[in-house]
Length: 423
Ligand code: GDP
Ligand code: IMO
Ligand code: MG
View 1 (cartoon, rainbow, N blue to C red):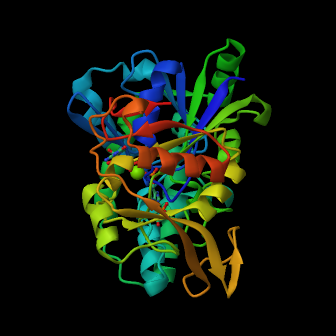
View 2: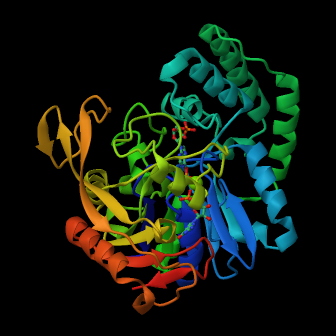
């Protein structure tokens, strides 16, 4: 089977960008299948840090072609900025980066609608990245959206105008104070579209089918995480796409029977950015230490990420929904120096002990039940071999493998490409 998946198992920011970059040497094609510039995928090598939002994380490898799939939503303005940042690396973008004609476009008014919707919700706001993700997927499923392929038609500006006019009326409907200068936003948008049109647009499902037939190895790169999935996440505090395994089939046009390995990636603790329930969230010194040592700030918005202990109830749920076949544990190095570690193995749910994720995990219903483990002192960041890993970390890993019933194949000990231990 030709297509492996790499998916975040928590609330995003697990380290997908880093691992896709590490794994790309084994693949011919890296294909993003959902999400948009709400994602921030960080890669580090040769002393340089790169943050990608829409472009797949295999872009720095000469051997791989990178596909932006039909399930992705593209903001031409942000896409242009990403391309600008890549210019100094002399990559052959025209042949290495291919964009699905069926991917949807984020219009400036989608971003405004996102802001208006959030402002209208007050305290109940989702904490969205304000990149226009929700409104763009709403237009997609509402059958009003604009697609990359439309840019090849002569009447695309007319289509644009009609949709933007409708959006302006909708912004008015929200009755909130949103300041904007649409003429300025549109000028930026149209300029960026001209640059986007220089790239290669493809029928990506056909391209990927032919690639599979030729035996090419494909890695599908997820964005966000399973607990932000529109169906299976902590609704309504989720994103607007299917971040879980099935999303790769619809987001790329790959048949389910072509999916091979499902690589699930998680942090050794847990983080969340934006609103929504987070049972193991910490408000004490431990949480503060995770945030500081782990440099837990959103790669897209710069917002501090909320931090907490690893939640095995939620992680098991994600492993099952995705059919994860191997795990990758990130940021173990951040936990060095903690005397004791806690892992949530069950919830007290309305007075009853449960081990599955219930419908509602708001704090008033759920209290985590923890298993305590011994911490380790050693600095992991210079370690390169599994034999070097401290015993207490190995005990932590063994415990997780037993609970999750899936092997942990990679232990990441720092942000750099080289700080990756294979087991
Ligand atoms: P993504 O959205 O899943 O690609 O993850 P992000 O890039 O948003 O966030 C992960 C952050 O952790 C980035 O700043 C990475 O450079 C960093 N990172 C990745 N793996 C490790 C690791 O093993 N240890 C440490 N300390 N940082 C890591
Ligand atoms: P990567 O790919 C972490 C969160 C937002 C918000 C919710 C909805 O880097 O892991 P949206 O803008 O999608 O409407 O926001 O989802 N969110 C992410 N959190 N990592 C991400 O992507 C995220 N993309 C969206 O903070 O709570
Ligand atoms: Mg991120």
